[in-house]
Figure 1 (cartoon, rainbow, N blue to C red):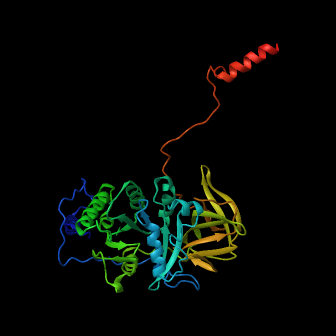
Figure 2 (cartoon, rainbow, N blue to C red):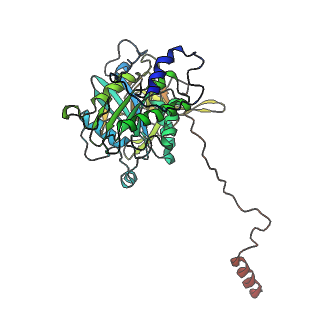
Amino acid sequence: MAGPLLRSLWSTTRKSLSPHHSTPSSPLKPYVYSRSANFRRHFSAAPATAASAAAPSGVLDPSRLRNVAVIAHVDHGKTTLMDRLLRQCGADIPHERALDSISLERERGITIASKVTSISWKEHELNMVDTPGHADFGGEVERVVGMVEGAILVVDAGEGPLAQTKFVLAKALKYGLRPILLLNKVDRPAVTEERCNEVESLVFDLFANLGASEEQLDFPVLYASAKEGWASSTFNKNPSDDAKDMSQLLDAIIGHVSPPTASLDAPFQMLVSMMERDFYLGRILTGRISSGVVRVGDRVHGLRTTDSGVAKIEEGKVVKLMKKKGTSMVLIDSAGAGDIISMAGLASPAIGHTVANVEVMTALPTVELDPPTISMTFGVNDSQLAGRDGTHHKKCTSDFDVLK
């Protein structure tokens, strides 16, 4: 439901498509931009989760969780958007770009490492992942998209989709995420409603070319000014004061993104997606709990997949469980399936390894990163002329002759 006529035609004809042709057979080229006077955005209800009926004490019900990644091209406003979402939900933001905590990020003004935080909205817990937008740090995006069920695709309404927009969107679609399109910076004087319609059609064309499914093509569209701190489901360059907030975007996340499908009754398993080090706690492992419940003091071990099978890395005890809420790291006693948490207690497991209960000997599938574009091999010069060319060699040879 994107506004232009092409999106409307696709919504009316998608039901007649064969299930074996869920994506258009040829690229869709939008040329007509029109908007119905009574057109409205709608957000599909999230499907029910397969979690157990009653969550254990202290563990959040997976049906109340939403795991979302914010993806975009560099400088399209991801981190600024995260600041406004945190502030909307009552978090204390000490400065702008609060999630860019690395000194190099603050110096360059770009996001280098992915950051996870959580906010509460209408009895729901939203785990938000801020990802890099620069092509050099694309591996950070690949590692974290497996932790979430939805994504907010931020696109500059003036620039439109760019190279990294295609890269991050391809990763999101590959993992079956249902993105929400957010056209940012619509308050700029050069941005008009016609330009927003054109960008929507370009993004829709990009979805189709990347092989999006019918559900992924039916993405909601919102307009926002992250700098001014508001988002709207209809085009508006200057909303009223009571509408200048992020409530419509937060409602869209709850309505459009599915809750994690997870079982609290199964044994505990977690795939490590992020890793950092603390001077006092040692290695801190971050990831989404795939199944089960983990508590402080539980015996766990690290697993990895090798050519000969699953190998045990290390066995230990959960010393600390932590969860990022706003800009602060909060200690928790337990966490359940579907939640994104950090733990300390193991020194050897790394990104891509599985942390599980000691009775579990099955490793979770790891995330496969794209191979590097350029590969280089460094070795000793073993050519026939090795050591026989260059001015320094000739000088050394003549000095040696003099000594003789």
